Image: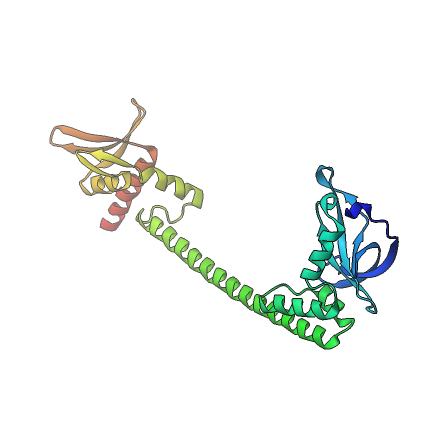
Length: 265
């Protein structure tokens, strides 16, 4: 017989479910229909793509409330006979078998929820206390693990911040004091320009290195108004040696020249 062909009457029974916080076990009256033995189902509902589903509930006689077992999908394809087999195989046919099944699941690390604990408390308070202790132990273990992971992340973040700070100081230091008072954005732009590599007289080096070398060899920065060009210039006898440079290189070279003059003064 298909589940949708069941004609047993619906009746209201108190069932355990989770409250709005998703953690607290609450009792609600639900209209349910018996499938077999202690297994019940709710009224069906239409969900996505137009198929039907319902919720399953377990209710043992003499217990104050039943247990919500979750959704049953593909409702239209299920038969009462299939449900009877699953019902017995999963230890839902008696409180004793339910305990045996739950013990095995707990030993394998299975989830123990508050609704299950409240359900078992209805006929075996001692066993419910045992499950509650297992649950709390796992929660404590999880909290400790999360605390350790949080501490590890914090330590990694501190190390990363320290590395970033050190890299920033090294980048500033590479400009020999020129970038010490620059805002971060301006410093990054200047470094982006000066870190580019080019070939100078057969040697590949960065603009920064080239400017430092040239200033050390006596070159001076100039702006040629007639050509709208920035240049590094050195007068050698009657010859004029120069390299075209960017505005950033010009400002860097001017700083180096002024710094050298100040140190020699």
